[in-house]
Image (cartoon, rainbow, N blue to C red):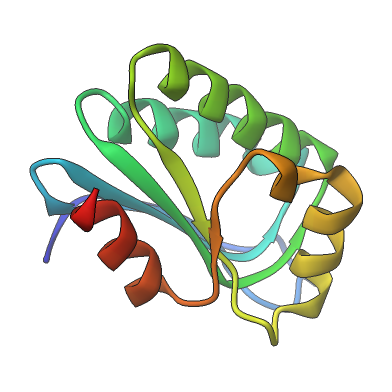
Length: 132
């Protein structure tokens, strides 16, 4: 795996951890967008840009394994990206480990499990996308 693009945003003073959005190509047909730290309306444009670049001709796994918070604006970005990908015959899936309880709860409350495929690990998500 080699990094295709890496966009980094450091946390504002007082934030507990840096927030980053990164994009890498797993293969020509699969890209990974990784969110680390807390994400909200302040990083939505960055997330949208990464998803748009990732999904040109690839299926995308959004890795939330090291994400500690997402708000409704991030949920909105994921839903919009899912819809756009589906219109082009592409897939967007998520990786959220069981120990990411805060993210699991937001995803549950938002009802994302009803239409998004969610994997417990990044490797499981990549295996599923690559096998299809």
